[in-house]
Length: 549
Image 1: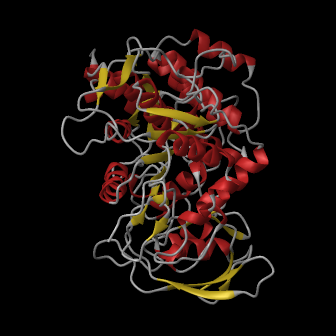
Image 2: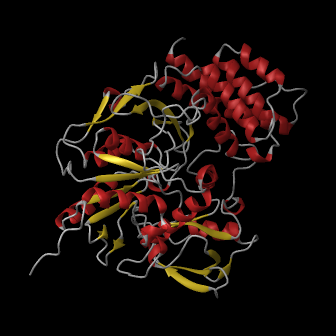
């Protein structure tokens, strides 16, 4: 038998590593688990190579072994490296992966599903530094890790820590097979919480239940429903907070029934109790100046000169509508100029970024160009597009004067927007040079627990076709990122940059309808924004005369 059918059979047939000596019962069990593990990891490598013609199976297998040893804090043994170099057949590579897992059987960082994750994340060594195992995020969104349906995230509950927790919960519930796990499958009461102690709030999602309840980043949660959060209770309480089967989530549609009561400590202030009703909510990543009581943003920063302000965070599907809504309101009120703040835009999806840039361009204008990596394979829709154009329909504001604010934390989609407006002659750029991130990525299902591997398929280029991606060998004089226009570069110290970001987050969390002052209300306390505002005022000239009754 040859061809795909034979290969499928091969992946299901154990190819056990040769034990060092006569196997004991425990050794036999470990050998069987290691073989399962090697088969599972290699099957994932096959999935990747099917979609990526440039991915050599030998390099993926070597990356998996390297990933495990890196996670264990050890160097790959020379004899394993030799075995990897000499492995030519599929079963030989699976055997080397299984052998590596056997040797690392007692490594604590590879306990349970973490060995799988380390091996799969190790595939990144066959690609670029931006590739790797994707995080299992709440609802598939790009800007929420795990917020419990409440709208707050805890220190530690992010990245691969939360992915491991989700997988172990699936295994404990019996919905995911414990393929290749050493030892017993995790029981619900033995799964460690990913949250650091104490439970410190890392982030509050704007306009979420937690935001409306008054939670703020830095708050410490000391009690959950009258139970104190301690080292002895943290695992059980986190499970009650996070797991639908054991916490407060109903079976009829996913929203949790009942209210969650927590006790919060903030600095030296007296602890206070907060009740939060869980609900479905979408992260809000676009802000103006003041959130009105009806949930809409007032974006008028300078009412005298009629200058508006819009800040964009993660670029998601809802972002275009949010920006367009603020623009429509500003236009109706006679807006003469706009500050578009992208300083804390970490990127996001390509299409919404193109749409946001298109709001300020004429229809069908070039927003960016695409350069595909050679021999990547696959047929995603955007692979057929070499030019990304602004939408032909929808609102357009091609004559509104714009100053775009960027900085070192402006990545990906934020840079795409800024470069499109700068090179299209639609805006000047102020602030500091952006990060230089232009990778376009797709995810590949790895066939286990919903895990996906993100790989770079290409790069977005400037409208003129020049690159803006910063590579490991790029120097400061190379042409990467988005640079401020002459006279509009405004250096700030790292301490000031951190303070400005904290103030911006505080501003986004101000309650709807509240007029309570926060530091970010005052642009004079924000040097880049003050410089951009001064530039616009000078360009626009004197403020318009007040309307006569």
